[in-house]
Length: 195
Image 1 (cartoon, rainbow, N blue to C red):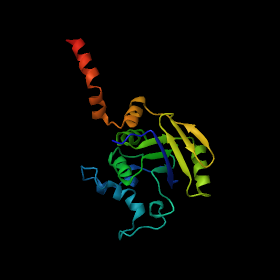
Image 2 (cartoon, rainbow, N blue to C red):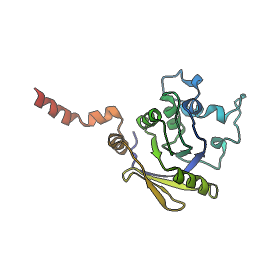
Image 3 (tube, rainbow, N blue to C red):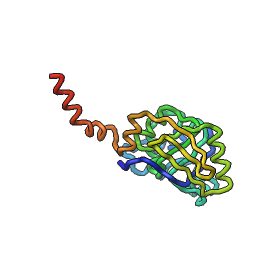
Image 4 (cartoon, helix red, strand yellow):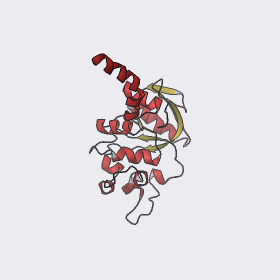
C-alpha cells in the first residue's frame, strides 16, 4: 500500500447530509467479490440517468471539481455495513473523505481500505463550502502525522482523531496482514518467552 503522511489536494464537494451506503454504491452492484470496477459505480444513481447518460448537475460529472478529497455533508456512510462503499470511494480515486460525522462501520471500512475519514466541526465544514463557492480550486492539506486538516484558502486548521494503530498502518502503508508480518520478529521473541 502507498504510505500516507500528508496530502494537499483540490476537493470534490458533496454537501448532502445522511448519505447512506446504498447511495454510495447501489445494492445491485454488490455481487462482485473483487474490488475492481466499484469506482465506476460510485454514486451511480446520482451520476447517471436510466439511460446511462451522465447527469450534468451531479458534482462528479462537473469538470470544475476534481481531487483526491471528497468533502461530504453530516452523517456520511450511514445505513448497511457494506464494505463495498469504501471500495467504491477508493476505486474512484478518493484518498480522504471529510465530514462532520461518519457512521462507525463506514469509518472503519474506509480505514481498512486506505480511505482516511477526517471528522471536522460543522463550522469548519461550512467554511470549506463557503470558500469553495468563491474559488473552485480551493485546496485542503491533511497532515496525518500531526492529525491536522488545514483549509489553505484561509489558513485555518483543526485537529482530528484517528486510532493510533490505524494511523501507523496509513503512515507505514500497511494493511492488517502486512502490519502483523512487520512485527514477526517481536511476535517470535514473545513466543519464545511462552515456551
